[in-house]
Image (cartoon, rainbow, N blue to C red):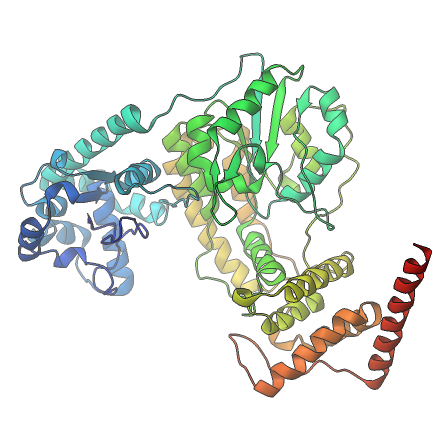
Length: 567
């Protein structure tokens, strides 16, 4: 079992890692403060020590983080010095070990080296980390830095000397294990060639970039850049060329980094006249550990987007493609979480990323495409096509989709359901092209989020100063966080009128799709099924609509028979 930061494992796999901050709230976990001598004695008598592991954090940061949380919860009135000087707080990790040495344990993880620890845990449990989740350790980093004065640090090093020594040993052991066991012989290309991997991440214009790259493959090739071909759907959306590096064992399994396929791609690239291999897919974001291990010499392009804009865009995507019914909800703290998680992996794996900005005011050039051509170092190709791909729905269109999502169970999706949702998505996407922008976030919420983001930035710059030096990234992040939120606010509780407008358009243009939805609406209302955030209403359907449906079906029948006769 992993003590303190990892929950007890069963059936040979880690369910998830956990940074324990509240030691009394969650009964599913063994709370740190209750790991008593009796429990340790029980562990020692029932388990082989080689089946035990420990996950440690730098003692001063751990104590500061725990104290901050307890203060916020109102669980302590003590000063920080009183808190870390209490006998029960002294050398907690050493108390857990109860005389055991780190070398006796099968797993030793380090919070500040979370992703390396994740790889180590995967080996311990024999778990294939096909999809990788990343953790943001910068939470409360600014508060911790302000709390941990030089005087406190020296006092903690003295009072918690055993834990400090244990932490230092844990880092040495983990780094040594990583270099000797986990570090692989990387794939590489000759010095005259380079590899650029655009990893997105999701909702940062990857579809638009990939569509432009695909349409300009010949011009890119003439400029010395090889961009492998890939397919797109009817809306111009694609997953990029992730299949150039990733594979599946079966159709039911997750994708994994395919070393042999990747090696073949690089070998083929060596024989080409091109000087740059360009790969683009947001799916690469879930395989950073493998990419950084096997392709450390590649240049990784990561686009930063305003967190509020990203949150709303993700919500739109959930409604459009993942049958979300619940209304929009904004968390209390808005953070650059995805950026911080990415920087943590880069820092551990010694990768220097190429950080760019999705927001047009911070781009180099007049558009996202122009900014990306700047990444490639080319000026000869004019980025003419700046069309938005996979853009947001209009307000009425999005609410219509959210209303219709009530009628479909993602777990029991039939072929008709999939076709219907896909057809509705395509139509709503086209219908929304010229709709006015809007937001579910009020001005007051935006102002509160601005303060939260600016507080977080001070923590980011302290944790990852070396990764934010180039390109005025810190200055641009500050400008991004400080930007005024100007989009007009829309209230989802007052959206029914907008839904009906979109519904009338749908009936006029796609009567066969509307007919199925109208029938589902009536059945749904009769059963009075209530789902989270849903409203039981009937979409209007008239006799004139029925006549138009009959005419449409007759036209389709005549057209089919006419084609058959001609054949």
